[in-house]
Image (cartoon, rainbow, N blue to C red):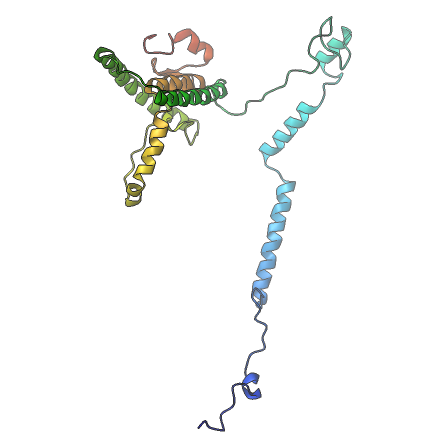
Length: 265
């Protein structure tokens, strides 16, 4: 039998010992902690306010430049005043027949240190990459005969020479890009491959990685890679892999470099 002197678990005596403190989740009961959170909140608001008030110098220069380019040329401009003296009126087209330009030629500012032909090279690389993939897909569908032995040997000899030139170009490209603070190559194969030790996880995913590598390898042949990388070095860094030197400017490159291939040199 139970002892009559023991209190029942639903009795008032037992319930009185329970805490009535509010323990809702997320409620901050420590005043010091609450004060710390309020201070951090005020600091964040202050940083956001200062960010809007005190903009970086590059942002301010860009905004002023854009504002200046959007401002129309007024009569204080010497060129505009000369046109007015010759009968030109604002809003009219140039020329006797009025078929010339109405708006001035847009100004394209170049703020980086890359060569003037860099953008055109990047565009050409994308186009040639697309064309190379199309050729590869067509090659898979077509049935071709095996070339004769002599032709294959000639091609292999040329490919070996192209591979040597490509490796040399990749090392030069890595060095010149690094000096221009370029952190990643435009194409993975523009720089030499870095040897990495295989882990167990790498070995498990080896088949998937091989498929991805094969997909990129067929994009360009060694000769095409060499042609593209040679043009990139010439347009971006004014460097000729065959001459082995960096030229002062594009005129110096055109005047003193025999051409863009090994045979030209």
